[in-house]
Image 1: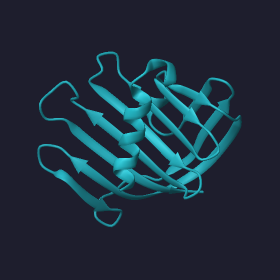
Image 2 (image 1 turned 45 degrees about the vertical axis):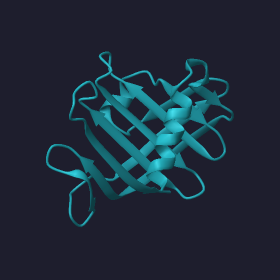
Image 3 (image 1 turned 90 degrees about the horizontal axis):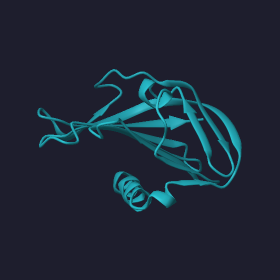
Length: 144
C-alpha cells in the first residue's frame, strides 16, 4: 500500500512543473537509516521482495536533509547520483520529504520519500526508462 501511495504522490507532483517545489519549513536533519527490504523488477525478477537476510545492502549513515523556505532542499548521502544532480521534485513539510531527479537523457531516475511520523524511507531507482524493459530497485529503510 505504501508503495502505491509513494507513486501516487510522485504522479501528482510530477505533472505540473510549478508544483515541483514546496518547502514549507526549514530544517537541518542528520539521520541514520537501517536497510529493511528491497523490491526488484528487472529481466530476472518481477517485483520480487528480498529482506535484509536475503540480500546484502548497506545502511545509510548520516543522511543529511537541509531545507530552507521557500525553495531550497539539499539531500546528501542517499546516493552518488542524488549527491551530484539538481533535484526536479522537492517537497518538505512537517510530514514528509519527497525528492525526484532524472539524468539528462531522462533514462534514469531516483526518488525518495521519508515519512517523519513512521521514520520509513523509500528510495526508488529506475533505469532503462526509455526502453521496453525498465529496471526498478525500491529499497525500504527504517530511519531515526
